[in-house]
Image 1 (cartoon, each protein chain N blue to C red):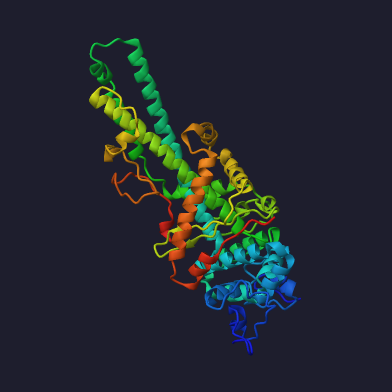
Image 2 (cartoon, rainbow over the protein chains, first blue to last red; image 1 turned 180 degrees about the horizontal axis):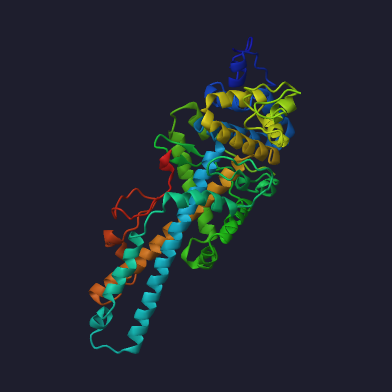
Length: 300
Length: 166
């Protein structure tokens, strides 16, 4: 449906509702005509009146962010019809738990290697060898092999432990105790709340918008700005894991072995620019093209 | 007052909507009258008709999960009208990225140590720069990383929770 005497095409929302799309249409900026699927998802989950209600309740400067998060939420509900965003949250939490386990194992290996190296140094200092090679080989070769092997003998976590992981890992996150909704399988809904509102007040919270490509791997898009507030938010979330994994404190001590904060910021921006380029090349459906258009700017 | 299937009081949804709670009420099993706020939140954000349509589209054994997820999302949206539960997803994604980078850096250190040990054992002397030994790193000690697609080292025995399961 087009405007009378005009060349502007009706937005996807007005097209769907078969009504005239006026210049004052609230939804037109967020639902271009060439992406009907995006609006369909949002309409299916929220409905037009609820979207308008939500938009009216937020600050005008935050309307774009709010609508984009609504679009993301609806896309997850389309992707996971039963659990929607909760499915993605559980998947990410499981991924975090697995990474932490791997990190723990690797740090253990690293510590063994360091100790081994120190012993080697002490061995060199205490003995004055005529043949250095023979001294180094003495009693050392088997230990190097033994230290490396356990890493690859690490057994995968049994399914039962993964079940518990959902509850323990989410329990480490800040919990906003509201209502007991959980009667179902393995998800503790009470523990899924992650307090990020205080970091959103300044309006500079960048929003990751994950969409899956054909292979199923998530493609993360980042907003233009990565602020220190965003970093403090995820550092705060990281600190909440101290309860379940004390080794996280030692990880923080090993700053010399990880990227510096500046390097992380710059490298994360670079990697996200790369991921943004990847998303720009993905055009399987309107949802993915909506993701390519999705970007947040910092709001003062 | 009309009763739901097995109780005398209407479900929270029918109470809220001020309507008769029929025995086949689709909301009744999932919105008990003891939790009025649960339906109130869901109704505020999604609307009763949308929830009803959604429940009809999933299998009966999945409806409880669907309702609980909707209740969670509704509550998150009420608490944070701008980002809702998507804010939590962004926090977790950043965390995953941070952990992946940390894992890569630590793996690189481990490779450096093992390479140094290997060269020390075989040559009897240490090669200074670890980077010069990377090209010679034995595949048996290479730890697969999600940042590359190298399927080396066979079965490392490590179950990796990546994004390829969807």
